[in-house]
Length: 324
Image 1 (cartoon, rainbow, N blue to C red):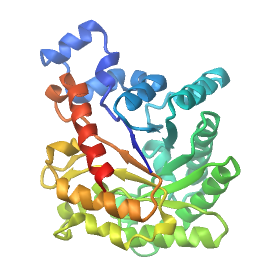
Image 2 (tube, rainbow, N blue to C red; image 1 turned 90 degrees about the vertical axis):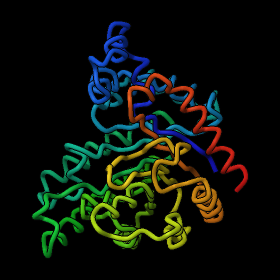
Image 3 (cartoon, helix red, strand yellow; image 1 turned 120 degrees about the horizontal axis):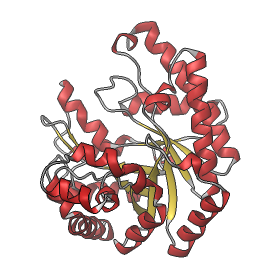
């Protein structure tokens, strides 16, 4: 099993100008604006993500193709260069397909909208294939609040299955594995494991093998919509069948504050060390191939200490998984 990272905003500060860095330090640029200015530049430097990953002791990088997405503009030589860099560092790759804006229409019952989302996903999958990625992860898409009941909900499910069949077959033909990720409870559709697993089973019955990328932090959001979490929150993993698991997203959540992806070693959310130790044993037992950390920096202070924080979290997680 490989441990990997999706860097979200963790490296964005490095791509600011010196003047912009001072603006961040003195509070003239906030955390959100920092990402607006430099996230696309950070995403473009795939080689740096690979280098940092290896330095941290990990062996996998998940690239994020959600907007801003620079990857579709990479030409053939650039894509080949990424493949060769990853191979030279013994780092495997995956791609997170777009999940907002156009990408969020994967479950849209309006066929024109759904088809455009699938076409975007296919272009991203071609990029993933060109850089030697092994997996792609796809969100189920989103719906308006008033389309989450009755026949509307059925139509969204039918549309998602069509999208997964088309996208999964396209990925399969290029030698990649497609994984469906659960939404958050705030989306109020395709957020629960049973609902996602039923969709995956139906897609498989139609002849396309896809898998379940269960994001445990997304599932924790159910606490903020009045749904319970077991005393040992990682025990949700016990119910997941091993034959649908290849790649998992590992991140935490702080209920009440609606804080996503805080650094795991700080134990701000539901996953304390004991929970993570049990989580690691479960996923190893189930034969999971890749676990991707999706840590995000939560303050300017963390931004300024980003490498110390990443090293501390990496050591913490590596120690847990080595002992599992």
